[in-house]
Image (cartoon, rainbow over all chains, first blue to last red; front, side, top):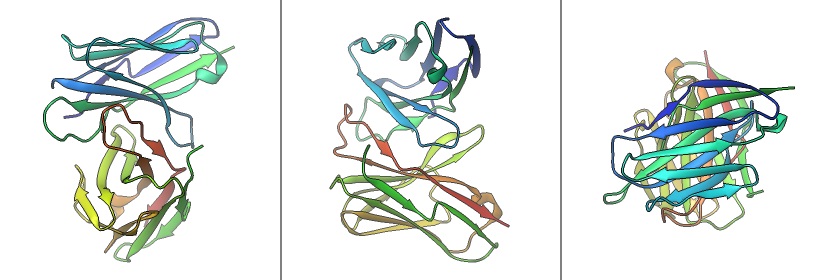
Length: 111
Length: 114
């Protein structure tokens, strides 16, 4: 079942912060985050495993709330280069499960 | 960057014709995937492969077939293309299926079926 991402779109000014959420109705083992710029391939950002692990990647970090089956991606002091569409991919906790992607959150950072 | 090459990058064809897309990798990764990307749907898995001649269906496999005769090549075939298969197709690879292994994507093939 496809995870739900919110918001669907965000417009920021350079230097502002944003949070993108990814929620699933299934118990999750891992959450993947990717960023895709227009006309390009999705690029891997980070993976979070169940256990509430938080990860960081420069000014982009993420958390995984196992109780809520939700992951949040935090973008702080946004830069123009952060513009693009952010996808979460979730892998369920039971048996062999493929990665299922959300529909994406479009982020636009303006000067 | 992961060594993934998709071909062709763009293709326009007519309804009812067969189409084959190719994904070639130089990473010697075991797992290969075909996704389609459509507005409002995100990335949806068509088929994947977990080794030479070992493939399985994804969530939107109807109308598609795949083959993998060598580790480095994964082919996606539309036997009789329909307009609903107009999409951007991405190939991805991963070293293992473990939950902490990322997938790396090719640059995509934009397919238009008239």
